[in-house]
Length: 270
Image 1 (cartoon, rainbow, N blue to C red):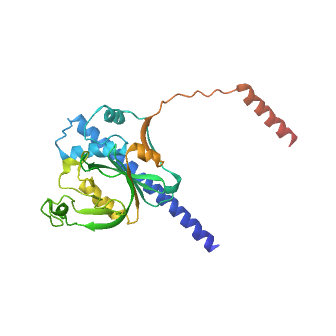
Image 2 (image 1 turned 45 degrees about the vertical axis):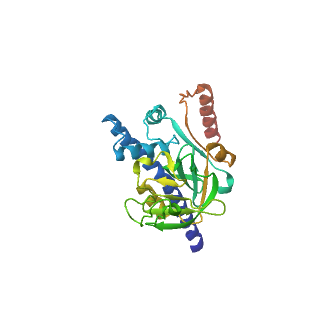
Image 3 (image 1 turned 180 degrees about the vertical axis):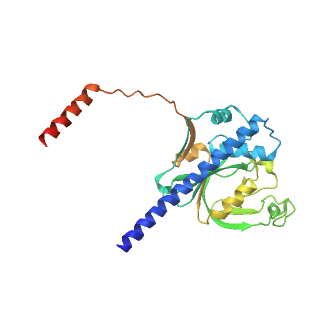
């Protein structure tokens, strides 16, 4: 009996934990949406970093193209109440405790937990001359206040933790079996997020990468690709707007009356 009770408790705790993980991203998405609406009502200023980051995060959370521009698609997502965020994953990763997808077309890093959206972050990616490779990576190392070596002598190295360190204060290194030197990291140029501007690495808002660093373990799979490539791997990310139709339920009074008569007959038999 004690074993059964213990197993039941574990099952309940697991369900609660899973619901908690899934709801974290949703709650923060709602928060960013309300904050962004407030900025817009008071006159949105793209030159204010705090306001721009809120817009970037809202775009990422809604599977919109992350660009920091208050455009038609963003306004639609803000104003429509019947939006649905659609993320489809292949079966092979559905049971992964943690799994990351980086959408190169939308500039979104999505964290999944057990097949569910955990959180979405805006990113910056490689420019055309130094593009971020499409590849199925894994995280192989992590570092706080990473040292920047200056790209093999091209630039002056920068010590870890310095304000001008291009890596920011966190580094999550990606596997090197095919592509070397790539990672997910912070930045020293906060207005670069939402652009194709890096030397190939994945840049994040500093507060975001510090958060990601704390809970993301090594050996986590990181799939990086354009939407076409991701779809070939079984990954699809989109936003859709559903039409809300009023349903009128018809009630057959005759059938209800018959039911009452049958119930009365049954009572008489009893």
